[in-house]
Image (tube, rainbow, N blue to C red; front, side):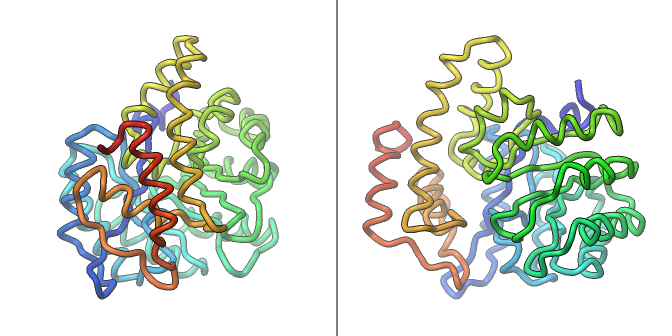
Length: 307
């Protein structure tokens, strides 16, 4: 088994960040949410301040405090991975060192956003973070948000660096890129971990050999995702497809009206299923409309997640 999968499992859950009505981070509810997903075994590992956690809308200090809260709340029951990617290399190094200080062993680091670096810039960024920290680094490719795709050749070069150990790929623009990453890295590091980062791409990327899923939907569908992996491993493809369709239907509702980040709709959906009040998404994300929620609630009822 791949070393990363053995340590962190197949389902990595990027925790949503709760706020109060004034959009202040609610750390107590964050600990409650962690207890909920751990006690219900909805994932194998927890990710703090990832995209689902609205990392780009949080301050540096808030991200550090969320890491602290997660480590304490998880209390060794599930591994904690820290999302430490920032727009600049300097701040990414600083935040990764904070994760390191807290005893977090692996960081998920997104390709620098807003500034659209070249492939050389991407390589230099991750090389500098790797040289200046001791954490293992999982690359995070999400071109729909950062505006640039990590090419397979760049990932292959980065795979030569000892503490760069894998990649989360959320490149919906190229659903076969998981295969490109396998082909590019298999000689550089046969143990390089390749995970899918998009719930709706779960089945296509499993077929390509994706080792696991980074899933915001696991807040609701963790058990189903685990059963999909098991069914596929046992050759029960029809069962895997049947389990996948409700997840797909739900995820499609969270992108209504051109929403790219699903949080505004996903938050109240998780509230309905878990009973935990997560508060509104942080501005500038617009709250879900009644019409949007009617669609999502109807799907949740139809697939048996709520009454």
